[in-house]
Image 1: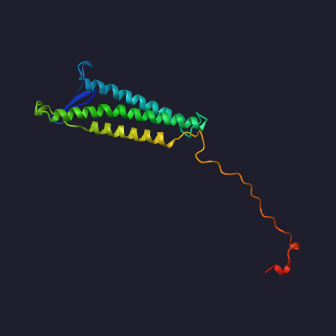
Image 2: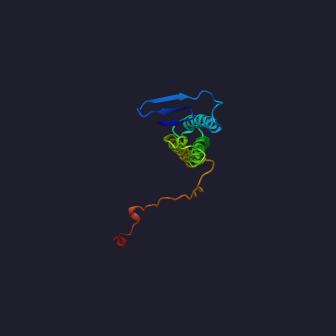
Length: 175
């Protein structure tokens, strides 16, 4: 038998291939790390969705905000929200992995009760990494346009050269 434990339910896969899943009965019966993981993952999803809506509003291709400087600040705040969502995703995933590793090497835990890191934790790390990279790109690629980056060029007026009328040319000087 193989046991899968998630933050919402636990499943048993029997040797015949049949899977039985059971939703946890009570929130209070869950360990503290699982309760915190549930809360942080849900808040991370909410913050990520809000960051997505803010990014859509502040995108350069939309007309929701006219001022370019304000658009840049909106995109930076969206990037900061994505980074916050990444941290909120990374905490429960890493905490669960830490608990699994500690229990795996503990001599007090029976061999049949030892857990291994599953695919969900790898997906959680990948999601946190993508949120972190996306938020960093938004924060770094949208600098506010409050002042010009380069000093303005000098405004020296150039005049076009004047041509002389053909009658003023000396024909001897013509080659």
